[in-house]
Amino acid sequence: MPQLPVLTAETTTTARDPVAQEAFGPSVAYSSLTTQQKSIVDREIGAAFYDVISRARWFAEINPSASDLPVEWNELLRQMAAARCKRVFRSVSDYALHWRMYVEPLQDRIADHYTASWMSSGTLASDIQTAASMRSHVISIIIRQRHPVFLPVNEIDRQVREEFVRLWNCKWWRFRRRMMKLTLTTSGSVVSAEGYQISAFASREIVVQGTVSEARSRITWLDSTRAAEAASRFDGETGKPRYFYSTMSDGRMSIALLPIPDEDYTAFAMVYIGAPTFTLGGSGGEIDGMRMLPVELRGHLRDRIVANIVSSAGREDNDAARLIRKAANDFELLAGQFDDGGPAEASAFPHHVGRTISQLGSWNGGNILSPLG
Image 1 (cartoon, one colour):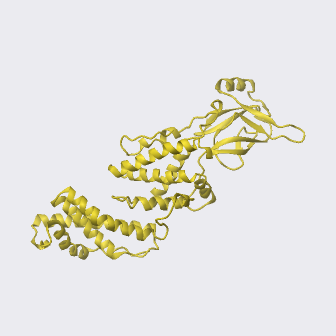
Image 2 (image 1 turned 135 degrees about the horizontal axis):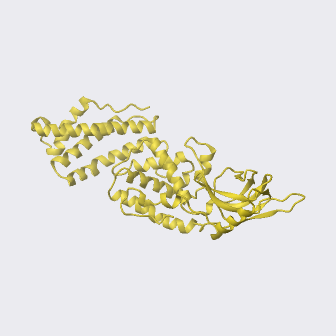
Image 3 (image 1 turned 30 degrees about the horizontal axis):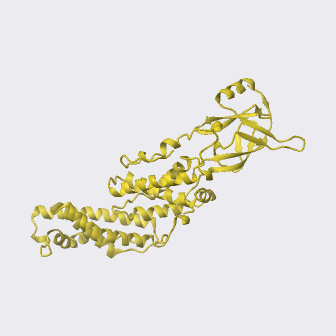
């Protein structure tokens, strides 16, 4: 792990003259300032000290193998303190100019150093194939904002997972369609042989596999009214299923079979699958989940996560608004390209929480809303 920058009382004392000269003029020494001015300069140097040391610890966490940058860290301390003093003693415009000319280049240089081993300027959305690589992309962007965001890594991981689920479930994307082998059990449940959660059926029928002595059969979907009639007819009966209808169980979409199967049956159906699970540890589920997104949507997912993080961090500025607008505009284009339109009307199932939680308006981004859902 790299050593944290040597930022001590001696360092902050050394910064006093350069900071005073930036704020009051090249010929002004710290010792010539009034007691009140010295107090303010020391306060701003102290604030910059804690900001820089917290950044250094964060970078050491995300890349423990990187070497240290003592010169850049100490220079960042002085330039941040000088900018803060200019805001107090001069004007906001002087503060902004100093920040743009001196602080931002240092921030970028430090960011490049700590991310060089796992990111490059040529990295593309097609390289995002795991949740871990998505995390790297997101970190590389949020630390290069004009006002960088330094979230704990576990919080970034949570954002990656939540935004992945929101994007996956907010539309009936074509890539969610899958011909799936199912097992209809005697308990009345429908089990996927592939382990995916079924969000909806893309057709009105489930085809039961035939045997040597028995031809294949079809199970037909029923709407609410016809399902009630069939339920009263087959109440308590078992046999080969003839009908199914949509219902909810433990907050998830499920189906009920009528009559309840008298034995396990193998069946096939075209379904829409729910968001696959993945972990940041590199399991197969993680790879399958992220890779199932088209390349264009992986890039969009990255932009959504960045916009959400920057907005949630309280960055109510033009940068945050720009990121949110880009995510919303890109979604419109991608929805037209990849949205399948959903199940047939007869078998349509609500988007459950998808329509609500996918709204960009729920982000801390003002009045900018998304066409999601």
